[in-house]
Amino acid sequence: MLHPPGPALRAAAGAAALALSAACGASLPTSSEAAAAETADAVCSLLRAWNDDLGEVVNATSQAITDDDDPSTANAVLADGFERLVDVAEDRRAQLDTLDLPASRDREALLDELRAGADESIAILEDELDDIAELEPITVDDQAGALGGAFVTVEGALAVIEPRAGAYSPELRAAFAGDEGCRHVVQPA
Image (tube, rainbow, N blue to C red; front, side, top):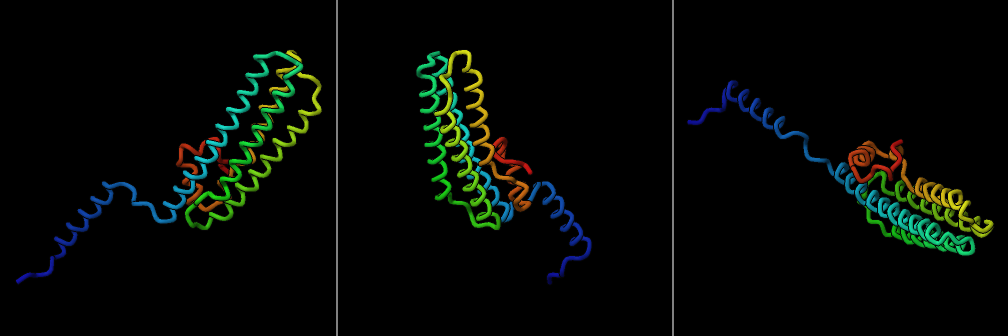
């Protein structure tokens, strides 16, 4: 005849289960934590690519101007570079309309913030393009100022697309903070 386990056996089994769970470390993520991690990865991957693309264009533009050292072409080269920057930003903005994020309480607010930031980023680049049309010819002596201004503008255009992690749920804030790829493309607060 089988007898139910006694108190000593139940205590030993409980202690073993507790030790086993402690040895395994953290528990599996909840569905909201998993959705937040997936969201952080998707958003930060897109923003890193956006950052990289704009950086490549502004660096190539800068290099072309300094290689030529020609005031008669420098303004056109800078304007062409900013037209490419606007094209890149518009392409990335279009990607936001099809960005497939998992369902979460943060999803719509995050997409709205990203879209608004992208629109503002495009406006910043377009405004600079308008300002370039008004520039005096960029001489060799003026290159540092003109190119410095271009880099500052691109930095500003990138800053406005960075979502503010502090505006979202604790799960998404933790996912942004824990994802190495989110550094430099998400505002922590």
